[in-house]
Image 1 (cartoon, rainbow over the protein chains, first blue to last red):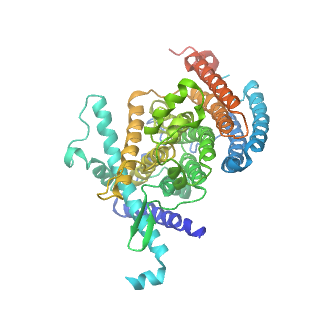
Image 2 (cartoon, chains in turn green, purple; image 1 turned 120 degrees about the vertical axis):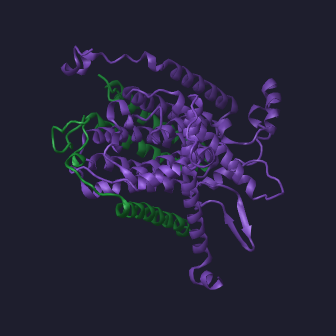
Image 3 (cartoon, rainbow over the protein chains, first blue to last red; image 1 turned 90 degrees about the vertical axis):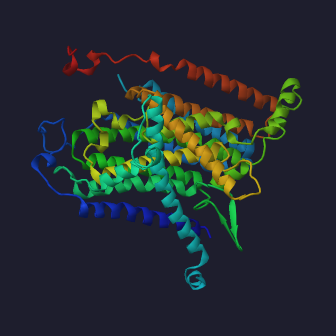
Length: 121
Length: 409
């Protein structure tokens, strides 16, 4: 009955999505609609925006954080099965995981030394 | 009644009842938590806070919600229509879903049916909780990008970088819990924390420590005692995950207006707001479940099923209070210090703590070695953290910020 455990979650997804969607819909029926040019403009401290759309480039730093995140998050995912099975693996599991973490720490130290974790140069 | 039970099956009926009760309870809790936050902060700042609507101003949140419901919901012409519409839903739903794996009480028996007071006891409970936390990022990314405006975009990429950085620390901080409990199911973890610490055998044969360990018999067997470093990392990461002070940079009003919320109004803004407060409740409840014994507490024969629920609520409210206290006391972090704390302190500390927990729990290693590794690594971590005073970080000079700001003030 493993899949049955996920049944309440499915119901909760449906219920909360219906609630959110329904309240947006109901609000759009009762709320006033008086659109003016000023209201349609994107906010820029009260002045008329310089550009029409603001989906421009942003610092490459953020992409670096995203890549580091993927590495460490995958590491975390590897650790959970190991942690749950630790009672059976014992010393073997410990040595294996120490080796794994040391390899990762080497990469981590490299990123640190190269300034990959610095936000301000 | 029995015809309905026959048609859908008892499991489906129970699931529906659980979902409806949980959903209603979470919405009700949010209303009370917002009121609670405003009252507590007002008290800390020697103000009165909401006082007009209902007893002690308790209905103020409800009034605000109704007001937002009847407000015009306009969007900027630069917005991407569908993404802009989906974002509030994408922010709110995962926050609510996180509560599904939190056990609020012991099992209850109605007639011949036994129901656990948890929506679904998943065998991957912790992973599910982390996954729902990650999904919450989508709402923020979509909101910031879809608005087609300056401040929302900046706020949302900042927020994304912050959330995924602390996501890693949070994931690593829960590995030791899975290790000592031997399970990812939240119900199993609460069960493993039942009873008292009992006799601690770890210090047997060591003169003074052995006697001291006898008093542990009166202390509940919660993971906070053995796993407090994991708890500290988890809770800091949890506050960052919810975008609450002192980690509320995505909505730093002095520089980003309201971050990703800038272009949202009316009911859509209310949904973001709801999501954030539900997230606070979920993180608090998870901290209680994993580190403070969940619903564990003394029960009495009168209404014996209700006591665990009351204990769970008392503990959760204590953590919500802590969240509010943080907001009233701590100034916002600077962005580089935020990343410094996440990447250079919390992640290595969590990794070292996993190793410490693993070594201490390995039966094949001599006890003296385990004790040595435990104390040695503990000292190393303490020195490491103590050395990292953020005030030693160099201040950002106006010159390094480029020509634009040079010479201004």
